[in-house]
Image 1 (cartoon, one colour):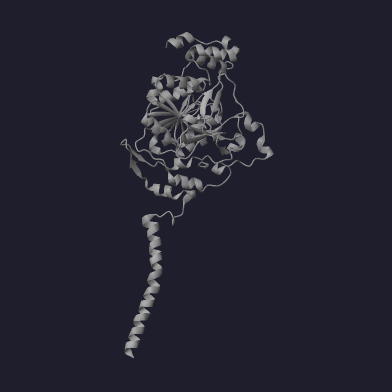
Image 2 (cartoon, rainbow, N blue to C red; image 1 turned 120 degrees about the vertical axis):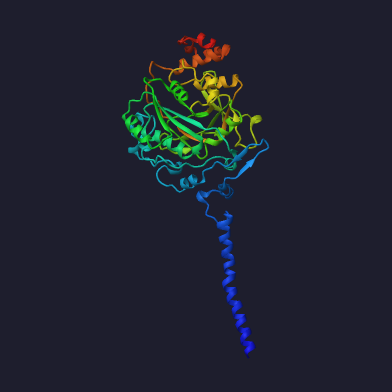
Length: 425
């Protein structure tokens, strides 16, 4: 009898142990996956980040055949915060406009709807619309730092600040030497003391001011002359930098300092501030014989199997690009005889190609830009664009300038302002 009771007790003990232990085998496995292995199958995926990117949160690094150590530069914590944001304009969605939002006054001073801009967060989130391959790319662990130069003239408060916030929010801090805001003789009160007071909270941001209206070209030169970074990155004053936009640019310059690189320029709608790609997305810059800038498809023989790879472009759009600071000055910078804006993108492009450099567009770098409904300010001294294009054609295109005059005969009689001196220099 005692033997039977003993066996029953042993069986009961084993049964209780099994009931207590076996379920916890699964619990322990789950805990181990979460804490030790960080298994993507059991972790929450912030912002829909795919499993392979969660693994890269460990900052993986690889040494390539060229001996360069490369790493993942994504800021996954910032991406997670952005993915959780909601509200008007968040995730780059259009602002829900009403008829009263579309008043003329909202456009008159800026060329875009500042009423809507003022109602969207300065730190708003954007959609990550890069090619999937971009999300897996590694870039050199040691990259040059850069001075971000942002010229402005009577820019709207929220559009200017959103540009600065997006750059600081989505750039590795160690890669930003400084952000230089260059005020081209603005007369709006919000761009004076209020702007200086606001920027005191951002120690990397400096403000320079011209003493008279200089125009975009000479204002950029002022910022470039003050820059201390190894690379100069020019942006317009109504932009929004997207996810991991900076390392792909700096990586190409690190490989070849004579490469000027441009991000893909996405469109921020001037009415509702919706964020989207340009029509056709990745296309090369070009111009016709009337000197109008155009975007043309990449020829089949130059297309890559991987659309995320950089590709060469004859000329840049002009507003957004990065260049090695010393190389920029070796090229002579911009021609100071060019007035206000226009034609400078051709001039710098011609010089790069003729002086042994390269010009590339970088699909894995994306920056949104507001294309104004119209230019909201007057150009001092009359129309500058035609004069600038004539100057560029005569200085850099030699006998081909005649083709321009055949299409635009009015250019022939414009003042060229010391063409011969410029050619000899």
